[in-house]
Length: 382
Ligand SMILES: [Fe+2]
Image (cartoon, rainbow, N blue to C red):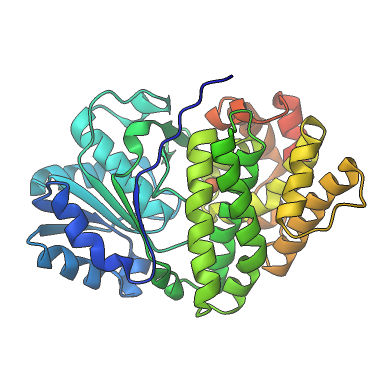
């Protein structure tokens, strides 16, 4: 029997879970907390209650919010300087995947030193990080439970994947109430990211029974509730489903890694500042079609999890139904766009393809892919 490892943080889940943020940071030994967020989250009104809970727990705070979507290496450097100058000893993020990944990258550099490139790839962090508490305000990235931090290297214009157990936050506070304030477009894009995490980790070469159960449940919840969450931002049943889906898809991919879709989107996102979920939507169906022959039964189970009746179908027919259903969902939530519409030029494809085959996420793709395969997939997705 193969041996597998499975890691998750402590998870506090449910409506009003944000109220636990102060007590959570305090019991990790924090005294001055570096709070990472962004302008959108601050405007949505979530930073004030978080700061109040932290202060009520007797903690000092320092807020850092100078960051963008697809967060950049220089934004992390600015955060590191501010953290050290303020004498902080713990990190809290209140925000989506971008503030969370910036918080993780700052935590990494303040105790390990050097530059982010020193840690690109798998298991290169040696010293412990400061205590980390993450409260996501979007349902998609799953970064609150994952061992990933994805940061844009602005010189090379690509996303670096830093993967290490050290990047798993100590406590994830997942409060579906926080999802109310994101707009429909962001709900669609982030939800698509969650679905991509679930599908890629389910068919990953590193999948285990422990990751499969989380991935499949995330697929089921997304198929059931993403469209509803996009259509009605106050549908708390749908928001709760999506908060759970995003988190468990995060647990699945944190442990099983991802695949060719993410190896490709990491390159596009480094070049074009569009939401990562939109890039996933453009690429995922093509990668699924490419991968189908490697694991048709897994694709049949994806169709089943999405609610298809597959009993009367051959494995191949049922498997391709999974792709049809994903395309249908992408259309329904308004993300059916090619990469050209997102802003990619065909001239960029050769370089992006050469970079994609070096991305750590490609290692676990169920079908091996060389540069020519990736180029063909980029052209299909254009
Ligand atoms: Fe992602």
